[in-house]
Image: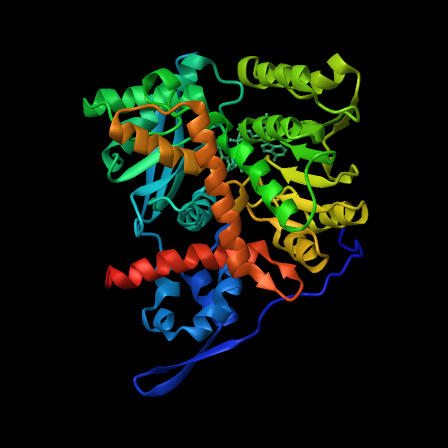
Length: 471
Ligand code: NDP
């Protein structure tokens, strides 16, 4: 059943030109002319351009068949955010010096529910990144089956090397501006890279103080103050559930497989935990310094150590290699190591075309994106053209925002569900997402999950937009 692992770099872009009537005349657009207009409206934003292009390529044929989307100018409307916010975040460090960062919130779409998406604190954050993540989030949230629009935000603030008090002062200053624009019926932020339980606590504390209201505006809250059970685990667990669905559909199973994971943060930790619980052997984790390779597998005790190291001590993954006497690949990612399943769970563009070629040559069967867009477009094309089961992030990592949606429901009802109930719902949602991808992603050569996810996410938002008029 395994795909043939020969590298095939054939490009697979549908060159269809759409013809439609405008004022009685034939008018033509192609993917390239549409993308030119996107680039003109959004200069210097390559990540956003790439995210839009990937979606447009997937839905081009559908649009060709259904003129209502062209007549409703849906493509242009869906690629224009409803609003974008940029703001100054001044704060004082422990030495008494004034520091300034830039905050962002891009509210892309409220078509199927209030804006919903995480906040990222990382030096690389800029408008391009936030816009691309917010666009992706809109389609991801659409796929979850829950009523959530799309947003994303953050700041170019580096939490690394900051004291708790510095992080708190930064979060408070960030919220001093953001609180005006969010609310449980308007926009509900959550965590992302650099924004974990600690930061959510500081952000929520300040929001509550400014609004004089205790409500469900932020998700990822602590269990004792409105959080949902399993929210921390949800993204990583969801990725593994999605992989299991893909494998089952393909006549394979996770048990006994070797799994390579990148990152060692929230998503990576819980993907590792669930993969191990389901009988797989996890052999790598990484961080910005390098990769640890543990051929015996990262067992429960070792994983507990990683969680303590990264979440409490905020240490480096290299310390794992020293403690357990395993190989440490300094400044390297895990993709040169042979594995059956690769789960990139760190950041954007961490699997290049040459990494993808290496994975394919080494017999990798399945790649699922725990992180947002960790595979470059060239890498994705290689996976698709070589029969690798490829789970795109907007489907595979949607478990986090799905449980955030469940947190909103619990907050609305003023109740807290037991862990088992949340996990069952998460499993059902991941199966629904998978089945939706299969439904729209069927091709002569098997399931193209990328295409399936883009089409399923698009149709729901686009149809709702048409029903709501020109808004
Ligand atoms: P964390 O901040 O908890 O962890 C990120 C991990 O990735 C850290 O181990 C970090 O290393 C590593 N990392 C970051 N940048 C790089 C890099 N350039 N090279 C190598 N390693 C790197 O973030 P999350 O786990 O929450 O998020 C990871 C990804 O998953 C992101 O793309 C995020 O958008 C996505 N995601 C997260 C969701 C969530 O619920 N948390 C939901 C859906 C998607 P170091 O420790 O050195 O910083």
